[in-house]
Length: 196
Image 1 (cartoon, rainbow, N blue to C red):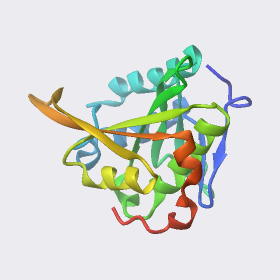
Image 2 (spheres, one colour):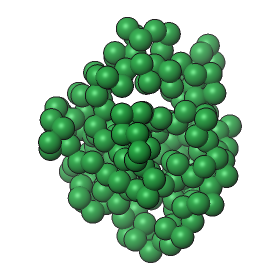
Image 3 (tube, rainbow, N blue to C red):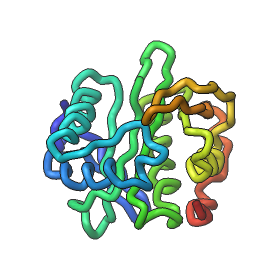
């Protein structure tokens, strides 16, 4: 795992994206047990003790070099985690990775994730030198689909009943963006337009 002195902090106009710490456990549990968050998220927890698994996963990504996730914090409250985002399933040979994210509902509709994922994508394409970033979204998660399209992702297909979640199979839509396409976008002018 990278220590805080080497982990890449990212900043946007309003947010700090920093390394996730053990002290974030309660906030992560709050988010990943919130009914509105987990309605469309693949992981949920029933206790803080169980949520330790998520902290361990973040650390494992860093240690193995298979990805990294950032805590999303307001610039004026860097200790206050309001969500998380990052890349995982990093494939260095093919230079691609998946992107994931979640945000507390109190911050929905304010362009938070658009602003933060823009910074993550810039880091992924510039510093990590990725060629492609992918995302998968449950088909009824309209807000997430809109977000990805605003970031320049293209819908690449749907896999029917591919994921088992809470006693049922769910369909997933797949999105992708290439480094070359991302660089042609004018997403910076649209940071405050997200209303999902």
